[in-house]
Length: 317
Length: 291
Image 1 (spheres, rainbow over the protein chains, first blue to last red):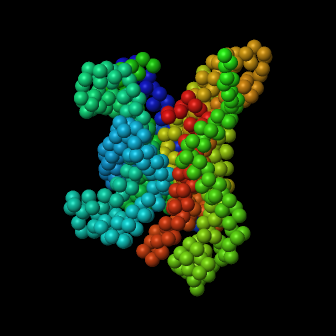
Image 2: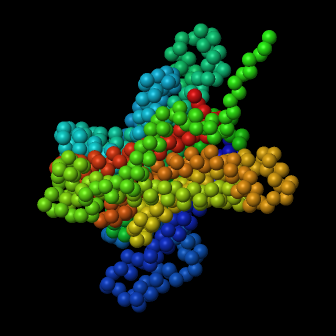
Image 3: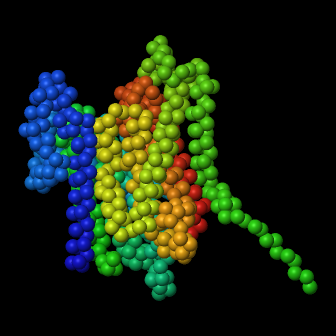
């Protein structure tokens, strides 16, 4: 196990290094480089730009700049926003809670609903339910999330008037839990749609893999009641690969959150990202890009380690 | 006693694949829908009495089935069906071209990584892993903000965020194929590495590649709709299915068809390509057949 851990951690660090190089490269790909914001301003002459370039050390060789940038990133200095001068990490921190709240709610809905549909589909393979669920999952994976959000707003806010059309709170009712849940329902369900479809598909195939195994036949031969075979013998093993699914799902979930937040004017990291792009606020854009990539990396690392903990067979490889 | 000759039917692999494909009703339906969408958006605009960019302020927000405006008009009085067809040209073309570029890059990287393995393979695949750490939409928007938006730029950016999964699939296939006897035979014949890779091994990975290509078109159409909806893809007055939804949210109460119509087109196209890919997987690779 120790060897597996070291191996896996080493890989993650290597990946993080490549990810950071990519991020650095993107930042320098910007027309005018990191200074493009100032270059657009008519307040500055070329001489000013040259002087700032020297002051910020942008005339040094790229590898040295990269090392410097990386060192500052590691120490928590992710630069300041062009917009209001606030430290990037602080801005991300202020928006992270809303995003996590949305993602966590959507994930819980998706896991419960997806596993239920997947398990039932596997047990009653090729039944009407299974076929409808399979087709439904494919359609759900094909609907643009933002459009589904628009339709949800049209139905539940505009036509029926049941749910608010956006934001996280009603102004003046920031502390109310009921108000919070009221605002959370629509965006969480919209974000959960794609996730549910994915969980359902993976759960179904994982369950099918398990119920065709010999030990399930043995359990049946022993005369165990069917519900016990399914819940005690099959489900426990079928759920294991879902840990990997959770890790793989993470980038999709983040991307979906960005779009959902935009449609529902949800004050999270995704909308911050889009606003920052609009303002050409590269430090914040880069910060969120690096932050989400790091989160994805850590997510898959945790999934891998957890999977190795629950399934000792894979530690060998 | 005479033994009646058993009717022996000669079935080529292609015929067998076609039969398996035909049995997949949803894939057949998908193929038909794709054909209709492609024909509709290529020929359709010539059959309509309206130009997709013709602004008619006197007849804005006409609901569907008003006179000759089958799908109504938008906030500038432009015919929605005409824009849907012209937008279909852009969205479908981007989907297909972005897929071709992504396949090209993914196949070359995957082939080299899988065939040579070792340090080169590991380096290439770690690069693939690293790019995959960035959620596609984040990467796409960050890159889109850096360059002048347009059809070509959007296409290239979408393929830049889509080639990695292809590289992974091809790499796995090549790694398995290079151990096979016919690969060793090709080496014994003194074939060059390039010849072995692209002439001997790659055709055997074709089933996986065709399936990945189909699913990639679906993904590319979806990504185009995301960036264009968010305003960083296809720029007006040109229409795409994504940017038709750009302003739709504002007019949701008074003109819901502006939001409903393009979304149905996107969902229909993406679902069809996904089902087509599913059907092709069953048809081309019988070992994966779950039925």
